Structure formats: structure tokens, C-alpha cells
Length: 347
Image (tube, rainbow, N blue to C red; front, top):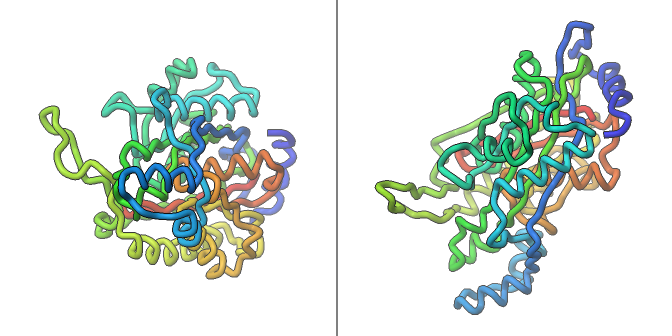
């Protein structure tokens, strides 16, 4: 991204409690990218498709409860790998970095194309990267934020110098299209961030949480055994339980993450949360006392794209000029597991 050196210098001057000594090693964002399938499906399109299945809903029912107006759904040739590779390639192009310059690929996904090898390895091959490590992270809608924390830690430890961090999901393939409570909520897509080692702070703080006691409120509990699908192969969700937990943990998580950097909500330029439901985004902003015009929201255009939702929203806000060098950005994810996590970043 342009003016990254200026942004990094601004970060080092304005971060209480985070020294920028000559020997320190940090990770900073130098590129972002996104990818969507070709098929755009509006609420009206979806309503017509569902009516043919005998499932009744309406644009008003969907939009008033979720804020979703449309989503992008994968076609026969779209895969998690192909979408992830497109997003990663866009991030590389923004940064002016080639495949020989990247030594780590981390992909967050809950919809891998194969049981193994990892989607990260498949993306690595697609991009012509033949060195360094590659692995997947599975934390559902928190996955990208978890992946950023992993990549940041490996860069700080000297294991990697440049890391592609990708969130990619094709949730349309694990939807029960006869279940109105879930099938209207999700879309497909991918987003990516390119991190580079730096002597000035970029990724400032990450916080990761999970509570397996809540695993039943959002899950896809099927598995493959002996060549057959065992258990329920589609996404299941207790919407009310997920909503209540998400609102509670996201506001607390934001405060926890900011406090770890000796900063406050007043210092924050942008909140980029998981794009699940406009009511969750609004409730989180209200509990934080954060103006809603500081919340990046793309749920209306993309719906819930799971691990892709945070980097898709981030990329849109960078490309349209809202997020600028020097801005303080908090990314938050919350999803099945139950997991929730945050990254605080100075651009």
C-alpha cells in the first residue's frame, strides 16, 4: 500500500506501551485483496429460488432481521482455493510482491476443497510459491483473525518475513436450502492480507478466545466415515443464542484488546467486525460508545461469508479510501466453536 513507511513511523510515535526499538520485529500490512464469485443473488432472486422449493420468505423478512440485501454464490467452477488465490493475488499486486518474496501462507476456512492437503497448500501452488510454510486455521467466522494472530507471531519470531493471510469460504455448499433461518444469511467469497516484517509496529495486539461448551449453538456436525457422510452435513444454528453471545463478547473483546495497547475507544479510527448481522454490528457499536460511522459494514452487499467477511470488509474500506495510512483499526471475529478474537492494527 502507498505511504506505508509514513504509516509505520506514525504508529511507532503514537503507541504507548509498545516500544519501537531498533532490534524489535513487527508485522505490518502492505497489501489487501478480495474475490467474489460471478453470481450476484439479490434477496428477490433468492426469494424466487426458495419459493420453487416451497420455502416462504421475503426481501423484507431478510433485510429487516439481518441487513442483508444480496450475496454472491459460487458457481460450478468456483472453489475455496480459486477464490482464495484470487484474493491473495490481488493483495500481492497491491504490495508489488511476487511469489518468490513470500515465505508463509495461512488460510482460514471451514469449507476446504479437500480433507487434505490444506487449502493453504493448494493456494500456495496456485500462486507459484514454492518456499516457506503453509497451513490452514479452522475457527469458523473468527478464522481470519486467528490466522492473522498466527502469522504475526511467526513474523515476530523470525520464522517468516512475508505472510499471506487468507480468509476463504464457500458456505453455500453446506447450506440446507430448505431451512429459511440459515440459508438466507450466508454468501461466498475470499479476502487476503499481505503482512511484512518491519521494525515499526503494525499488528499491535491480538486476543484469542474460545468456549467449547457453546459448540452446539453453531455447527456443521457431519463427518465422512468409510466413504459415507455420517451425521448432519449442513450448518445448524441457534440464532438467538448466537446473537446474544456475539453482542456480549464483541464489546468486551474490543475493550480488552484496546486496553492491552494502552489505548481507548476514542483512539480508534475504524472497527471492522465480522459481518453476520447488522443488528450485531449496531449493538456492538452502541455498547462501546462508538459512532456507527466508524464501523465498516458490508453485510448488505456480501451477507455472512464466514472467514472471508473481515478481510472482504477491510479490503473494501482500504480501496474506497476510508482506511488510510496511520489509522488505528480493530478487526473482530466471532463464530462457531464458540470462538471470538481480535487484531488491533496500525495502518
